[in-house]
Length: 536
Image (tube, rainbow, N blue to C red):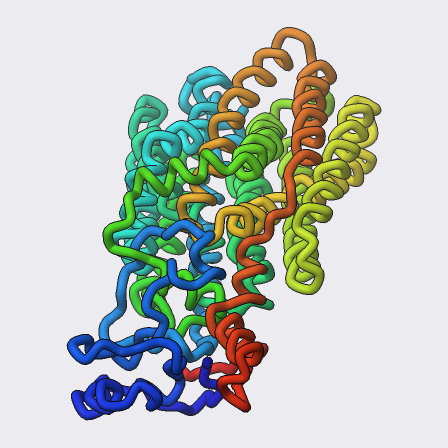
């Protein structure tokens, strides 16, 4: 049974406790772990106080159906998986992550939001500037599996440090590209930042699962994704203000340097905060599902087998495709927004940035609302489908109103579209974790992001060519067609919510049911339905 006392101290597993277990199977090995009378304890096997008394996961019906996950990095000291607590540090961890994710996302869009200005400064084509955004997508694809392996091997803290360090390095490298002939240097800095992104994008659902309770995970994931979206929003708003469209290249270089110095300083501060604040994981699992996930983790689990199991999960495969279509459309719109707005409203670089800001701010609001809604209702399939349908409707309306000649109409329609399109992103992460539990959250979200990057590259190149040759209307209709396909595929996804089942039905609960049926024990203790907070 699970201990409900929030003040209980961790035991150190002394020999006296172990001998007590060997001497009498009816005596609990730990105050919070009871040994069922029907489970015999072999005299030659000593039980660590932090290990469940159940002999193996396969021996219990509620765990045998679930495939073993990858090994989780272990923290120093004994870990009592039977105590369910949440740590106050969790909010600091998710906030710091959200901030350096924001910084990295800003660097992704800072060129695209003033595409025409960087074209003139470096003397390159619009397609070359587009690649400064698309390199983020291209880099992610081959590096996902190695980084996902590193996440499982070394844990959250190591990945966070690496991602924030690379983000900081890339920001400072760009300061060496303040001459028109140094475009390759700015490409190098952007590629370094794109590698940092690989260490960032797969983290939200993992941080939410490792640090947050069952009724907080969707909200926490939304907050983690929130930072990335906020960075994109700032990337649309700030560059047009800091870097005006002027002909004098020396003055232009000065304005660009101001932007680069600001982002480099912010990235450095956030790297320092990651060193101070970020911790591998809390002392106790924050939910039953996470506790069970630790118990099922095996150091011998095959990394490739985990990937194979994910691709055998039809519902997850459908989600990978639909998520990629939606996120890819968002990436293409973000990259090409400046070009589309300038084409219909010449000289409106600042308003083009503001429209992008509106899209993302509305999406951030949608992400937070959807996260809170999911934590309250657990209606993952229904919410995902409704949001996807509204994304398509918003895209159609935006497409039909872009060329009307009224910027205020574009602001409204773009914001409505962004509320659903960007708000869908954390929904996809959390739905994936539900469908694939207890597999690695980093792997499931990573595969979603790979799909998003692949479709993002395809959509950005294709829509860019369509806009250049045929105009914005055919280019946006192109995206509407694929979003329609995404809606149809989403309808076929079954709501197999495995993590929710694990939270409701744990080995402890099943064992208590057996005890009641057999009338072996006259009283049992229920696992806690609430979590308490522990101090730093």
